[in-house]
Image 1 (cartoon, rainbow, N blue to C red):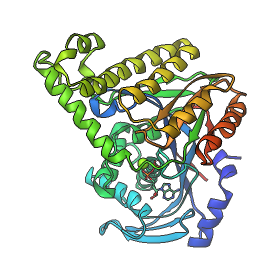
Image 2: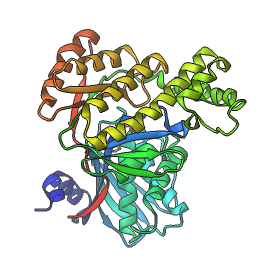
Image 3: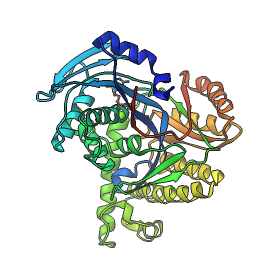
Image 4: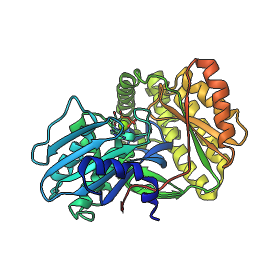
Length: 392
Ligand code: ADP
Ligand code: MG
C-alpha cells in the first residue's frame, strides 16, 4: 500500500462526503524546526532548519474550470473562490494562505486551474513550527500539479512565491526560511540556507540523532515589537561599522574579530545585538561542519551557546523558555538545547540520542509545569522529507 493511502483514510473520506467523488492526489507540506541560526535571516546570514514529521496535507481533485472549493478539517469550514476573483477573507483566515499562493503563482505567470480540496494538518498552529508555510507549500504543489506546471518554477522560486503570499496577501512579515525548508527538506538532512544568495545545501543529519521540541505554550505577544526593535538595532550597528568597514552591507559581512576591533564605535546594547548575530552565523557554519563529521557533542555545544547568546546578548528568551531549556538539558542523552524561532515564547528544541526521547519528554513534564503552572506540549521528530505530491 502506498504510504499516503495508509495515513489518510479520514481525509479521503471527508473529501468524498464533501464533494461526492474521490480525491486523486495528496500534496504534503511539512512543518519545520530551526536547529540553529536565529535572527540571522534578516541580517543576510545563515540558517539551518530541519523538516518535521508533522505536516499539512491537501487531498485534491483538479477541476475543468477556475473554481476552487476547499474544506478545512480542523476549522470545519468550507470556502469557495474563483481564481479570477481572489479576495482577502477576514472571517476565515486560513483561506488566505491558499488564495495568496494562487495569487502569487498567477503573478509568476502560471496558468492555474481550479480544484476541489480538503485540508488537514498536525503541525501545531501558531506555535512557531510554521504550520503557515506548511499550508502554503502544500497549496502551491497542489495548484502546480493540478495545472501540469510542476516544472515551471525552480524550488527557490516556489518558496519565494509562497513567502510573497504570506507577506503580501496574508499580511504577515516572515523570512524565506520556512517555505524553503518545507519545500526542499530531505529525510535525514538539515538544510543550510544562505539568506543572502538563497543558495542552499543539504547537510547530512545523522540517523542516530533525534529532535525533541518543547512547546512552552507561553504567549509570544512581546515578540512583534521586540523583533522590529532588534532589526533596527542591527541596522544601526551596520551603519556605525560601515564608517570603518565600507564594504559591508549587512552583519553577515562582519567577523567576530572585526566586531571586537571596532567595539568602541557601537552603543553597548547595539554591540551585544551585533555580537549575537555575528557569532550565530559562525555557529551555524561550525554546526554544519560538526554534522558532516557526525560530531553530535559539538552540535549540542553550538546549540547551547546559541541559547546563551539569544538570552544574554539578543535578549529574546523568556523565563518559560529558559526553564524549558534547563529541563531538556537535565535529561540523560541530551546533547544540547536552545530556544527556536523568534523568541519570547513558542518552542525550544533539543538534540538527543534516539531512544532517549521519552526520558527527555519526562524531564520536561517533571520540571516545566511545576515551575510555570503551564502544561507544555512535547513533539519528537527525526529530520523528515520535504514537500511532495503523491497519487492516491
Ligand atoms: P505558525 O506558522 O507558527 O504555526 P502562523 O500564525 O504563522 O503560525 O500560522 C497559523 C495559521 O496557518 C493558522 O491560524 C491557520 O490560518 C493556518 N493553518 C495552519 N495549519 C492549518 C490547517 N491544518 N488547516 C487550516 N489552516 C491552517
Ligand atoms: Mg507562520
